[in-house]
Amino acid sequence: MPRANQENHKPSPFFKFFIKFGLSCRDATRLISESRERPLTLLEKIKLKLLCRCCCYTDRYRQQIDAVCSEVHQHPDCCEDALPETGLCEESRARIKARMREE
Image (cartoon, rainbow, N blue to C red; front, side, top):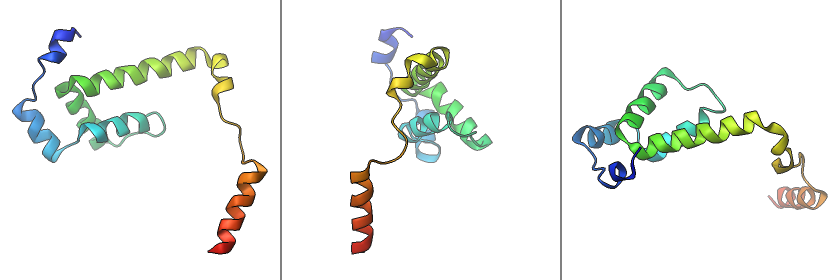
């Protein structure tokens, strides 16, 4: 999308109505992220599609998440080092056990 389109972007009356009764941009970004982990319900999909049609920023976020996920799937070997280790270190386990005993 051209940059001028975003600079001149003003919310339409439909967009304002949709935010009031539908889905906010904050909720939409959460749903976009969740859609990578679970299937969205039909209502969630419809609301998300409608909001992406009305809001160029939410749609851009969706496109960016799609691009990042696509790159990660194409080059999984590059991302292995970024994954956290499974399990807790002994210090964290001891701290949690101590906290649980206090309560």
